[in-house]
Every structure is written in structure tokens, then in C-alpha cells.
Image 1: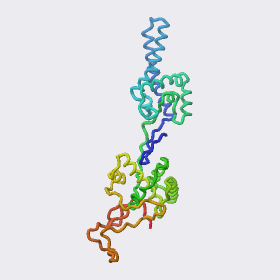
Image 2 (image 1 turned 180 degrees about the vertical axis):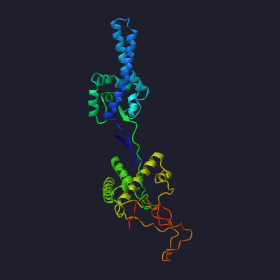
Image 3 (image 1 turned 30 degrees about the vertical axis):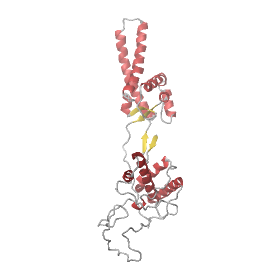
Image 4 (image 1 turned 90 degrees about the vertical axis):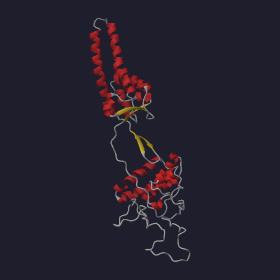
Length: 332
């Protein structure tokens, strides 16, 4: 399976067709071609009964080349790689880079197919497809093509939970250039399925992934930060950077990638470091109590201050006691 991993750690899959589906598609194409060839041959024999044997042989060879070689090449060229058998099996011929094939690709595949499929009864084609890592026969190798599956099973895209608000922007100074795409994909797959795993197994997996990610970035996991929350925060930081790179930078791109909350990370957010402790205590603003003055009571709100917000979802607490959480528990 050929994979391309985007900045959001999403794998775009290009699945090569394997030998069974390809063999079935070729068999359907051969049945259709042989049926047409038999009909054309009967018509030629009936219409050229008065000609000599040499003329009949020449017409037979011409009909063979036209029906069993020329017609498949024309069909693959006009349909952009979808013959009758491939349409029935959900397959398509594409270039190595995923683009549609042209006449030269179909011509090379058709000419070599005469040798490895028709003359050897498919033995050479089956052997080459079985040995190839992407299921390619000799015609695909010389033409620079690949047969892929078009109809794929429908899968639900897992939801990656956002990190807790107190971790937003904490990893802006991390160097993520040394993290491989495979590790990003493993982290994303864990985050989308962590609620389906056994707590002990999921915790051990999160610790291992967090350790691997910390080794790649060169900065250890901050003290007091759960491994799953750390992974979610670093993945969100990568999404923010990728969005800024694609959209041309600016605060709007970072806010949109952070989840569309409409709020930028606080300006006083310190960069992550080996000795950082979380969650950090926010400094008092201009409205804070004066040095030496009495502190406000727990049930008294300062004039002009915003209502109390939950540390989990950024909104006020529900009267029933439910909080719009993110799936992560902040450290005690």
C-alpha cells in the first residue's frame, strides 16, 4: 500500500490491486475479446469464401491483431485505464504517480500483454504479479503504470480529541522536523482509538508514543502532563504549523487549526522546557489585587470580570455538574 501522510497525520492511501482481482478482470476482458473475435472471424470467413487461402490468412491475422490487441489498447486509452473487466472489479490503470494513463502507456501494456498473457496463457503475468510488491506485471513495469483499486471499503474517520485548554500553545518552541511520518500516523491512530482500548494497554501505549516523540524532539515530556494530553497537544501544534504554511501564515490560520475557538493563545504562554511544570499559574492582570491588599473571596466576582470558566471546555459549568470535557484529565 502506497501512503502519503499529510501535515494532519492523515494517510492518503493508494491501494494496488492484487493478483486475484487482476486475474478476474483479465479473464472477463479475454472472454469479451474472444467472443468478439469469434464473431468477426465467422463474418470474415463467410464474406471471403471466394478469396484464396493467402488472403484469408492475412485477414485472419489482421482481425486477431485488431480485436485482441488494438481494441483493448483503444478501450484503455479512451476510458483512462478502465476496461470492461476492470470496471466490473473496481480497478483502474494509473501511472506510477497516480495520474491517468495515455496512449503510449496503453500501447506498451497491450503489446507486452500479447506475450505474457496470450502466448504464455498468463503464466508470466501471474508470476510477475505475484512476485511484485505492488502486484505489477511486466507490461506495467515497462509502461510505468500501476493497477489500483477504486472501490474501497467505507471507513469512518476517527475524531482526534483536542488537548486541554491549559496545554494550548505550550509546545510552540518544539522542533518537530525530526519526527517521521510513521510516528505521526501512529500517534493519530492512538488518539482516535484510545477510548476503545483497555486502560492499562492504552496507558502503556501512550507512554511509549510520548517517549518516542520526546526522543525525536529532544525535549522530555513536561512533568505532570498526562501522556495522552501531551500527544494531543503536539499533534495540534503540528496542525497549526501546517495550516500557517499552507494558508500563508497569520493569526487566523493558527486559530482555525486550533479548533476554531476564535481565541488566540495567551501572549504570556511560556515555551516548553525540560524543567517546566504544568499547569502553569496565570499571572495576575491589571485588575488583580494590589500587593498587600485583601484577596477577593471565593464567592465574590471582581467587577467587570468574566464568568468562571471550566478548565475542560472553556465554557461555564453545567448546572447538572457535567462539563464539556476534551477526554483528558488535568493533573492534580
